[in-house]
Structures are given as C-alpha cells and as structure tokens.
Image (cartoon, rainbow over all chains, first blue to last red; front, side, top):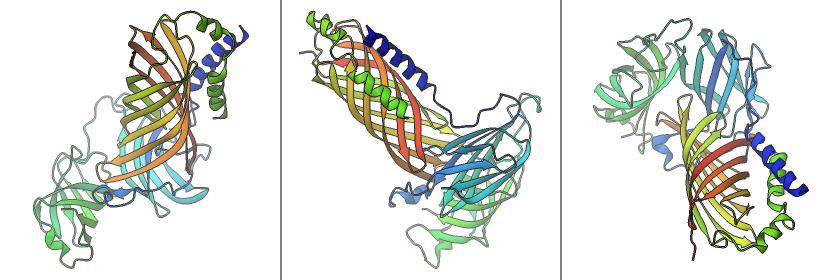
Length: 244
Length: 181
C-alpha cells in the first residue's frame, strides 16, 4: 500500500517536473521588450558543409547578458536558443561570453515597447557576428494594426550586417542584382561588390573567380545593408562566395 | 537533474515484490505480455526555448518480469527566431509496466542515449551539436485489443553539452502494436 501510494506520488512529481524549470529570467508579463535568439556555434556555410566535419561542441557555456541590466542574463541552451524578457525599451547591448570570457557584444537600438526582437548570431573563433535581426511589433498597441514592412528584405536593417543567399539576376562582378532565395526579399537586391573579396567554392585562390559571376550563378553575399525601403535595397558586399 | 534520474530509478524498481506479485498470480487479461511491441507517435518537444514537433518510434522487448528493454527514436523540427531547428534523439533503456493484466497499463521508463541538434539559418549557415544524456518518462497504454493499444507518454530529456545540462520535456501520443504469437 505504502509502495503504491509512493508510486503515485512519484508519478505526480514527475509530471510536475515536466513543467520545466525555464532558463529565461521570468518577468511579469508586461509590455517590455522580448528578445528571442539563436546562437549558431562554429557555423559552417551550408553549401560547403557537406565536406566538412560537423562542427563542434568546442564552444563552452555561452551566456548572454543585457549590459544595461546585468540581472537579465541567460545561458544559451544546448540547441542554441535563448530568450530574455523585459529587456529595456529604446535600446540595449547584449554581451556574449563563452565560459566566462566576453567574446563580443551587439547593440540594438530603436526598440519600442511591446516589441519582440528575433536575432540569429554566429559565434566563431571567439567572435560574435549578428547574422539576422527581425522585429515584431505585435501590431497591438503602439502601431495600431498591421504596419507595412519598411524594408524590402525581411528583417533587414540599414547600416547593419547582412548575409544573403540567392542567384545573380544580372550585372557584373562589381555591381549586380541578386534574386534572394525564399521569401526573404520582395524584390531584387542591388549588390555593390567592387570592393568585395571573391571566393569560388572548389576554386579557392582562383585568380579569375570573379568571371564565374554570371546570371544564374548561386552566390552567398556578406556585407552591409546601406539602404532599404519597400521598393529597393542596396548592399555593399565585403565577401561574395560563388557556390555554383 | 538529479531529481529526474532518482525518480526514474524509483519508478523502475518500486513494487517488484508487493502488489504486482498478486497481480501475476491471476491469468492475464491481455495476452502477449512477453511479446515485443512497436509504437509510432506524434511528438512534441520543448527544446531549449523552442517548440518542436515531430514523430517518434519505439520498440520494446520483454526482459524480466514486468520489465522491458526499450529502443526509442524521435525526430523533431521547428523554427525559432528565424532559424530552423531539428533534433534527432536516440535512446535505449528499461521500461517497467505496472498493470499488465488491465486495460490501462501505465509504465515508467529510464533511457540513456543522445540527441543531435541542428540549427540552420536561411539555408546559408548551419551548426550542430550532439549531446548525451538520457530520459525519464511515464506513460500509459490503453489496450484496444490483444495487439493494439493507444499510448500516451511524457518524458523528460536530460542532455549534457559543453554548456551544461539541459532539461527538455517531451510529450507523445500514438499507437502501439504488440506482436502476439
């Protein structure tokens, strides 16, 4: 009898344990800013990853802290996800540390109350790089409804780092138009690549890599989003990787 | 984490001598308690901060008394903050079935194994990590016939990576088939 009661008690406790101890700092659900993020550790470019050994659990314990309020600090989970609630509106700086050592920081500005910010970050070689940022106003309080996107590229922020994958529509190695994969962009993106370094997969070091940039070529562009509105977007590339 | 493991062990060892001895004295209402079974299920996994959906499959074989050997495989996908996430879990362990002669057959199980997590952004960047650990879980079969049962299950995955321990709950519901001879 005692064992039976004990067993049901255990079952009850196990069920309770399933309401997992959340890792994010909890906060009263208010109109604060919510930050959701994914950290890609030692990420590899997908097209090239087939031949590479699958990354690593080399990076250690990654902690993200809000510089303006260090009590807002979370440990990134094993699959790279993290969430922080009640981040200060207006702007804040995220400090990333690996095994207690600060490896970089990202500053996010112009954030309204009630916004959800989604970021994708890459940590490689002890450096932090913002890959993608997207804001979701929620469309409930301040904006008064669905607000049209202000940038042709989903999540694109002017003067921020950006990475795009797609096919060359037209142009030359110094200036071309890019058809971005998927639904990420609602139109062609202008890429200024005269100052960019060129890498051709399988032909690293090839002197005439640039000549492979032809219409239809599959490329990965890394650079800075210099301008963006609902009709046009321009990127100044720092690296163009021709994948095919 | 220690609590989760302790619970799992207790679920397995409790009641070896007591109530189930009396139950075993009666002829089983459902045959095939020593037969292998196979199950397939829809599965939900809370992985880190992400909600992932997927499917699971498991097989179990009679081992000793009401204890069975279990092999479990599950695959979940979803997205979070603009990244696509996948997780493949592979586990093996022991399951203790508590009332094998009843229509409702609750069970507890403990497994060890690993999970391979992959994060991918816009088909441009990807990273992955394999973590090791185990699960503790409870569930129940509701026998529809000698061979078929509806199964509901809740597990708690405890996985270790370079960043420490993660605890991720997993819920599944599906069908189980018993190979009754």
